[in-house]
Each structure stands twice: as structure tokens, then as C-alpha cells.
Length: 211
Picture 1 (cartoon, helix red, strand yellow):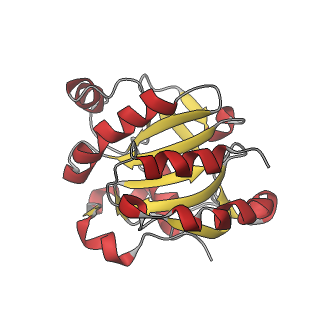
Picture 2 (cartoon, rainbow, N blue to C red):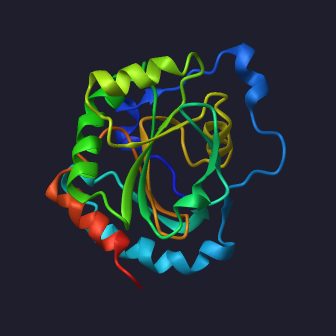
Picture 3 (cartoon, rainbow, N blue to C red):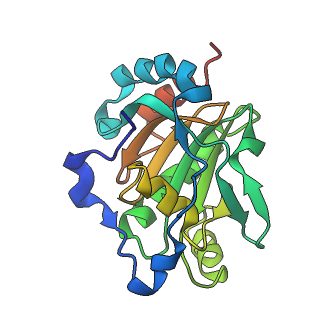
């Protein structure tokens, strides 16, 4: 079963209301995110994360069938294209956020602190912004709150968001995925969390551990 946002924290999650005029951005062709397949072997590592879902991370949902995120097509702040496959070899915390999302503002300093504490050749925090307006707004947001060490990627047409939504992987913001070095989503958490806490760091170490 694919990883889905947890109901207990759903009420605290800022739900994305897609206006009628944006309906055309929904993915209508075969998506890049697939469950099983090349990520089937990651199921055992995902299961091993379950005992670490404690404290502020109690709502973390390990994936029964990890989804393959490697072919997700994202954008850089200047409009360039990047695929998540380019981060092969790194474990990622992939956080989907927006400037209008109040819980995202609360969570972002913790993600910045996680990057400062743990970021390196084998691990990075990726902030995936889904604002559909000017690219300057999320850039100013990150600068204003001092979250400038994150890998800053964008989803200005909400294609990645809608692709994940169509597969039941995301319902609102913030949503954070723990992605292994092969691009397989091991777990997800709906709502904000203290990602620089001891519990979060223990989770990251387990996810980044070599098999």
C-alpha cells in the first residue's frame, strides 16, 4: 500500500485548494512515480524505520511499497530542470511547502537546522516549493527566515504535487518524504515536525545507513 498522510495530523495540515483555473495542470499522462518495481528492495529499510517514528515524528508513515521518485521532474529557482535522479547516492528529506502555508513557516527553521547539522555528501534537505506565482516570492521567503542552505527546487505548475496527489501520496502541505539514495520514498509525514530533533536525526541515520 502506498504511503499516505496520517489522519490524526490531517487537521493540522494546510490543505491545498486548487482553483478551477488550475485544473489543467493535473497530470493526465502516465506519471513518473511508480510503486514497487526498482524500489521493491527498499521495503525492508522502510519497515525498519517504524520503531523510530516517535515523539514529534510519531505521525511518520513508513511505506509498505516504496514509490520511485527518481524520475520526478522539478525546477530550479531560475527555471532550469532537474530530476530527483540527479541526487543518486544521497538520502534526502524532501519537503513540499508553499509561502502561504502557515505550518510550513513554523517547520522551515527546523529543516534549515537539520541541513546545517547533518547535510553532507550523503544527505541533503530539499525544499520543494509549489507556489504558482512569481519565483521571487519563495526566494524572498527563504531569505527572510534564514533557510538558505536547503536545496531550493520548485514546482511552479504543481505538476509534481498533482502527480503525487493522484497516487495518494500527498494531500496537503507541508508533506515531507524520506527518500533513500536510490530515489525510493521510504516514509512520509503530513504536517510540520521538528526535523532537527534527536528523534529526527536518529531516523535520518537509519535511512542513510548502507545496506
